[in-house]
Image (tube, rainbow, N blue to C red; front, top):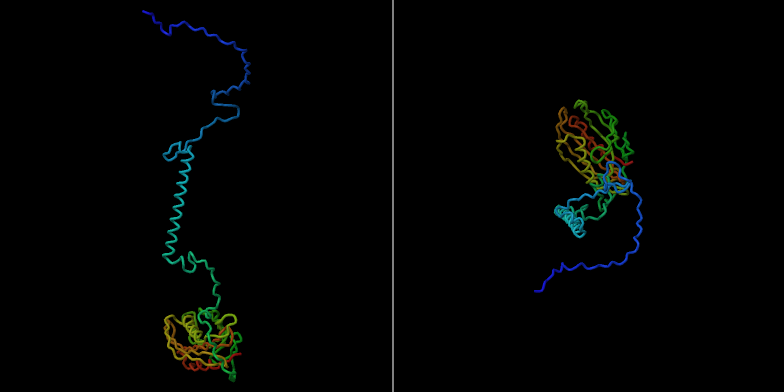
Length: 323
């Protein structure tokens, strides 16, 4: 039986090595400085260089640190956040527009979609706004009228004159400026006290006063006397009398005074005021168109405690003449 030898039992093969050249010269690096006491090797890499601290790992909302390192996933996450914000802005804008449309603020003047520039503010006097000039100017009567003889009150500011009365009438020594909503100025005339100190601090008067009020604008020279008269009468009631007064209309007519168009209103106001004996007052108001932007006014008031002077409510206005 042939003897089998293990391959590992073969005799060692002789290995012949090629000659090796001289060993290369190894240059020694400069001796590194020794670590300062208290630092172990590996904690300091060099003099003056702080140890390297690894950056902190930020949470990625469950994606792990791999999401931050993956630019594709990071960009998708950023895009998702931006898309959500844009959708929120669009939704809010649609809600605002819908509310504007439902409330009418989007299309009405000054609304959301109103691109029209604001017009200039209305600077006309209050009476000019309430009483625009008539479309057809009235015909002026020819000529003037003779000035009645006797003492007269002259009011150059209002542009009229009228009859002056004696005792108990006295020159008007006050100035009712910018009275009422229409800003009428009464600075000239006569008066006397009918009830002194009736409310502890006030006197009640009978009056004959002239004034003027802007009733047109710029070059406007024609007045709507009916409208102006009604507005002045309403302003007098609010400005000079108790709030609970009641109007008793007597007459309202157009006429000419001194050759100028005019309107005369006459009425009695009934009222009740604590401490006041008078319970009504006869009032007449004459409006005169002098061909100027301002209307001239004569205001006469006679309390019922002095009815003997009621005739002046007719006589004084009829004596008015333009200057």
